[in-house]
Length: 209
Image (cartoon, rainbow, N blue to C red; front, top):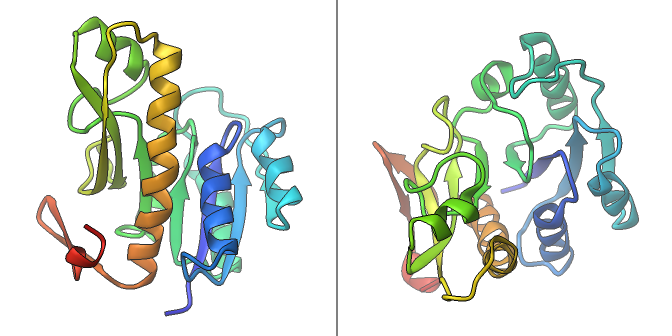
């Protein structure tokens, strides 16, 4: 299966970098990667260029959480022009609700820094500590119209220490994000994922456990 991947970013792009480097090492089976950003100052754009990956800024005027349909169409055009088959959200600080979701339904995945369905949304690590959770983690899931609510692909668990701060907890969770996000891309590229209701069935999952 030949697969081109589009990675949407807004910030530093650490998960983007993990995916690109895993593919360079031959672990993902992805043909080409393109990086798109709604932020002209995103460090991820320079990181992608340094790694030899095409990086494009999409000029948007929206200041809110959602892009306009017209702005989403600009992303869709760039993705389709490059025959992208999988879209990965990697710190993309916009809600997908229009053309991107319609065009790539079942082919958009996201990483979230909690064990979904707990702690959807923002300020996750602060809320985990506030609630006194003993464990947290991260989740790769398919993207749907409901934010952070799509079918779960992979999760990783991280113990919460009594002396944790949001920053120290985020650092440990991020290490797990960098592990399971590329693995999820690989599972997709190998055609091992199928969605049944709210569940994602992984063919041959015993090979990864």
